[in-house]
Length: 367
Image (tube, rainbow, N blue to C red):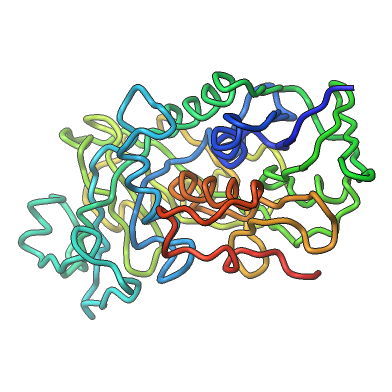
């Protein structure tokens, strides 16, 4: 029987980044049920790094700790992982305050932009927008490069990544897990559940109580626009969080209606109604002519009932480690979250890079 120290179920960014942290000194195997890793969430994310996302929370602290790791190219990317973008939170006639600033400082702290300056940044905004709050530090994340760097690091450090390998069942022995997969049996000291929307299913197959994960569909459409110069537009959203858009090519944008539709874990796809809502909200925000829908897709974002990320060993079942519930922040928090989880699995002292982060903020309680 194949034996490893850590078996990670799920090859998306959660499992891949954790594997990259552990593979140097532990025998690591990542198993992925699909034919490729990151198909349902990681591979369909319009990911960006945004300091204000998540409010004044422990998840935001993970984002802030992750930024310098992205800038350093962790875990060995050959291309820059962040591309400067900037973000605008539009305000209406009431001139809404920015309520999620919390302890943000420096370039992470949103600054007020009045209508004249706003017009220079995004020409064609409709009259209802009186100004905006601008986040200079917002950046696109090169998701594919980051994900592939993590998977490559696992392999380079002696670990393995196995696709088309679903977990069928698992039982805890005297000091290890005996795991049956569609590709054969595996013995592991630690079983990590990084299965995203399927996290509760994996837990139940291992005899562990679920945490109540809920998958949510999120839709994005790429629209061809009857104007040019759009590629470097800021990320633009409204204070009521009903849409966002950002430049993609010289004459196209990505538009999202910020939908969160509960769905069963599945290979989700964009619904025509959600695409229509996205276009409607976009056309009410700017006067740009929409010429065509060039592409549309949907991905899964998965939340625990309290919408907090869940990292740590299960309190009732020895050797079962949760790494789930990342919601819409999984990619931008992955460098720091993977370090936190790796420290917990190794029983290592907290890292200096995580000085403002407590593992107790992410524990899985009794169910």
